[in-house]
Image 1 (cartoon, rainbow, N blue to C red):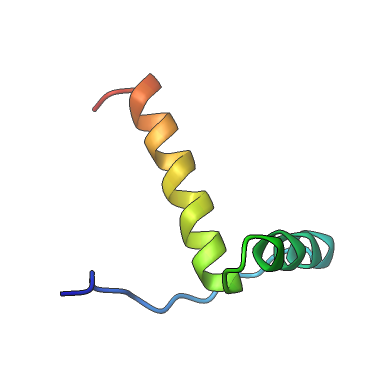
Image 2: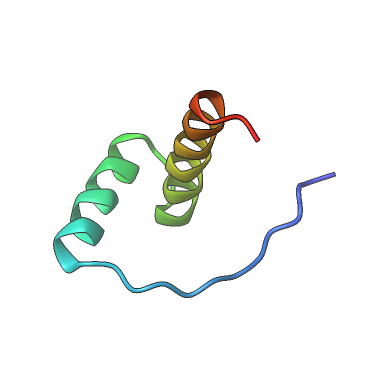
Length: 52
């Protein structure tokens, strides 16, 4: 079973959007998949250094 997903709307700087599109394409992922991956990685790092 796939994990549940929620649609969200965010506003990003244009230069950031373009860079993420490049990185996602290089990683053969969609823009959304890439952002999800990056955010998960960041949150995991924060949790590792700042436990709840």
